[in-house]
Length: 317
Image (tube, rainbow, N blue to C red; front, side, top):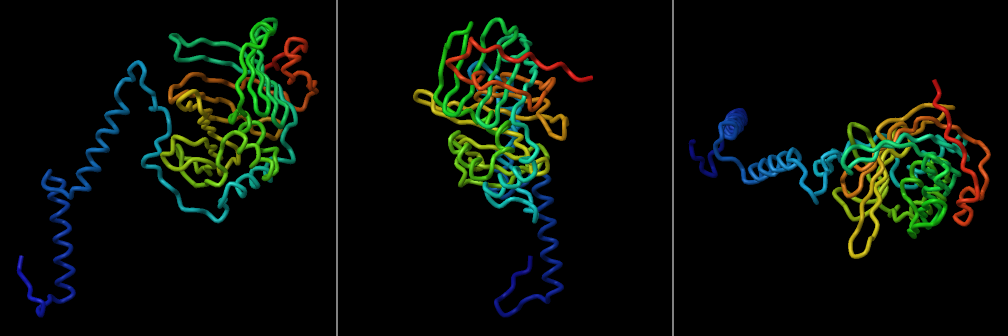
C-alpha cells in the first residue's frame, strides 16, 4: 500500500475506494481462516463452547438449563410507545386490562406429570383459589387428605390430614399467576415484595419470541426473584423464585407455555415447573370453574382435615 505523508492526502473518492477494498480484504481473510481480531476470536470460541455445553448430556448432579430461555445474548427490543417504563406502570396495565373481570374464586382440575424421578408419574390434583393470597392443592383421591396450602407468608404441607411441613414464605408463582391481575398497582407491589421480588428493577426483553416486561432481577442475575409479564397478553408468563435454603439458595420456576380462553379470561393451559434448572413437573389446567362459593375454612391450616374440598371440575367438551 502506498505510504502518505502528512501533507499528501488522497482525494475523497480515492479514500472511499481504498476503505472499501480494505474492508473486503479483512472479511476475506477472516472467512478464509486467516488472522482475526482478538475480540472476534474470543467471541467465536465462547459461542462454540456454549453450543457444545448445551448439547452435552446432563450428568448426575448437574443442572439442566437446556430448556431455560437463553439470557446471555438476550436481545433487548426497541421500546414501543405502549410499553411500560417501570414495575408500577406494568402492574397498572395488567390490572387495567383484567382487574374488573378477574375471578374471586376458582377451582381447577390439574393433570400432573412428575418428572425427574425415573419414569414420568401422572396424577390428578384439585387447585382451589381465593384471590388474593389463598390457594389450596388437594391430591386425588381427596380421601387421602393430603396436599398443600398457600397463605401469605407460609406454605403448609399435609399428609393424611396432619400437618407434615411448614415453610415461612410467600409463594411467588401463586401470587404471579393468580393474584396480580386482580390487584391494584400498590397492592401488587406489596405482594411481590413479600415474595422477595425487588420492584425497583425493571427491564424489557424478548423471551422465546415474546416481548416481556421483567420485574426483579437483571440480565444474567441468578440471585434475585423475578416475574416476566407478556406485554401483549398482559399476564405473567414466567415466575422465577430465588430463596435462601440453609447455607445456599434454591431457585424454582413456573413457566406458562400456553393459555386457554374461557369466560372472557385467559388461564394457563400448560405450566412447566423447574427446580435448579431441572424440569420437575408439567401441569395441565384441564378444567376451570370460576366464582363459586368456597368456605374460608378451606384455606385455614387448622381446619385442613375438617373441611371437604370441592370436587375437581369436569372437562368441557
